[in-house]
Image (cartoon, rainbow, N blue to C red; front, side, top):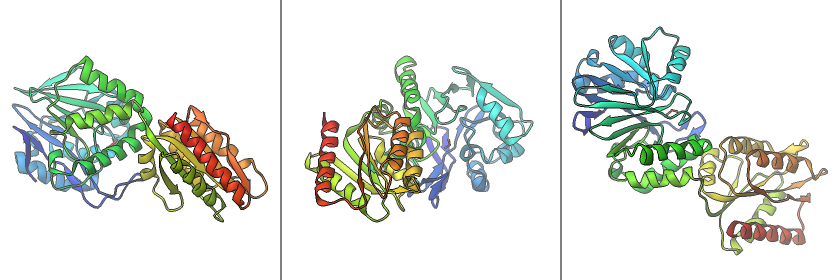
Length: 396
Ligand code: FEO
């Protein structure tokens, strides 16, 4: 698939139509591993693809330049296997090309691939001239790994942003304007929530550096997954700024699991209370539910309530799995709370849920609401009141 995005800048990546799981993250719309060829007096290949797609990838490159040995630079913005899996084969096919990556990337490459490759490590502001064009490198540690960097091409003003601004989204059209904006934003949101939400502070600084300090003119953003941003650069920058600032909306999530439907009865009554206060609410029973979809909702939800029955003196396993994922991603949640039914010990499950919510650094956590076995009608009224109180806090 030969696609010229700008004069002498070609898309040579891979569309992974059938991907449905990316290290535990559900990818309902597949994904892409993007790679770009920049042709000038020197030729640079920016990023590469997952190992199983190497042969198809090489054919894509050949379609543009014929002989891979013409490549002078293999720019590696990020060490992770979805962007470097085909590197060993590329090095074989273009032995004269120099691998260029960040200083932390160099150490990672030597460790991960265990090859005696000649690697040029770059730091912020380093440049490589390709002839009429120049590549400038800016390391962005933790977006997504410590080695991550972005590459900026002038005078074309193209930002090769690697994981940043990406989406797991397979489509036959590579440009933003050729795809439904709502779909690509939905996937960009899911990507942000599951991959980089925990480093929002770092992303905020990077956005400031790129747009305010360096004042980079950006005419195209070429991420390593999903579509290329060209028509809607302002839209994705606005969303990234909102997410990086940890902005939330008036929305509550009721996330629970249940054994004999008692905790579920409480969840339903609590949800009614939230609804009656006019706050948007979404409900998830964890059994069989996709955590990466729930986390997408967490990204802009102001309040999260977690319900768990007590099992073996502790919280329900699905609740434990959710809270482990939730706290690791450092959610922007402003207020949280817990509820649940117990058989003979009112404390154990709630103590564990509360401890996890504290570890997630939620600023305000309501006292838990618990009932023995099946909640009776008066107790369900209290559940509804609990939901109302929670909603009022969200609105205040
Ligand atoms: Fe798309 Fe962090 O790799």
